[in-house]
Image (cartoon, rainbow, N blue to C red):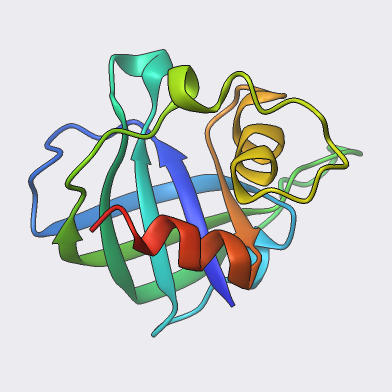
Length: 136
């Protein structure tokens, strides 16, 4: 399975991204070493959306805090960049894809990343992975 992550990215051209304690949703907690990841620089922190593709070199689940009833699973990941995006894809490009049942890859990304605008790691379908692959 492929994954996408939307996070605060200090250096969009870095060769390695170390992202501690990232929230996970939609299967994101299953991310593991060797998985392909599409990296989005969060617009909430001044980023531009899709910036890179990479491979997970390390993944470790963050233990849940004691005494807290509802917790979203978190994972710390290190990603080695394998390619830089050649064209833009972010909130602006995906905003119009809001018919949640149309089956389009753009809609899946809009739903998973921007319906709830928090930063997170998400699992993506093969169709979304193929779609994102066209940006490199």
